[in-house]
Length: 108
Ligand code: 2BA
Image (tube, rainbow, N blue to C red; front, side, top):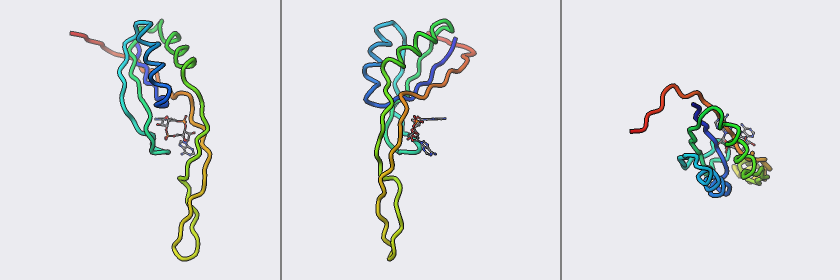
């Protein structure tokens, strides 16, 4: 068995969760925050049999889009202790996915 940890953009998570549950996958949604942008994203925990991992990957690929985000994280120091925001373009991936081996799974 594998545990798929998928970090996806908030906009993509409702459709992805719907497709996963339609296909009878079990999924847990966690509200998370990206360390770099400090913006909200969604982390999904999906426990599946080994043979189902590719099916889940396909649903993630179908639902998660890469987007260009403009942020003002960068600031430029100006004379007189003034800082002006500088726009920074960041490409946020469709999804960041980790696949972990599950040693034991119990449902009681
Ligand atoms: P954030 O950390 O907010 O990162 C958002 C996007 O900013 C990243 O998109 C990447 O394009 C850029 N970025 C991140 N760190 C950077 C840095 N040190 N320098 C320059 N640009 C940087 P993605 O790579 O698609 O990541 C989207 C979100 O997935 C991340 O949000 C984070 O929450 C998670 N993530 C990505 N890689 C991860 C990893 N190795 N471990 C844990 N979480 C990860």
